[in-house]
Image (tube, rainbow, N blue to C red; front, side):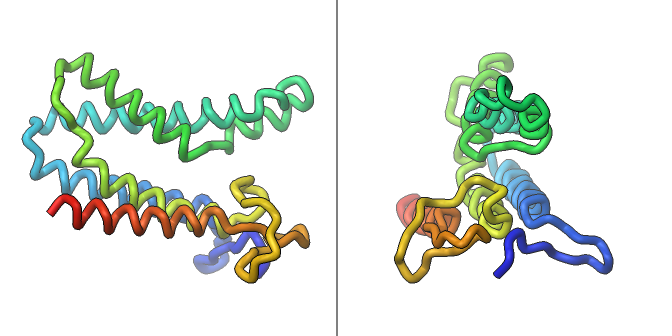
Length: 184
């Protein structure tokens, strides 16, 4: 397999990270909206919380990736600016979303828990997005360390590595099943 694994829609070549990130956001948002209909928080309040979380996720995804690579600012300003435009991290997005939600809740005066609406969408969206990370290969910079295990993946540099993206997907599926049966 050659990485990145591009997808084609006619003559249009779609990068796997863009494709799966778009699918992840779409599916997660659709699930949040479905769950929000059953929620006890009023629709305007829920909308504010969703927007706060989305804005926090966007900012957090960028801020954390920039902090991870702050050394590039001194070394290569163009590469740093490229990271600013293209770089993002799911951990930063999650942290940013939590902060965005909590700030929004404080502003609109909500004190009760609001996270139940987001649990399944977050897990499913993350798992879908990680497929894109895996199919992107080395340029995503989320691959694991070198391994001699038979399921190691050569992302294009001749080194077999742990497919950490797939490990995370497996973990998320197990977590989803655990939460589902635990909440019954």
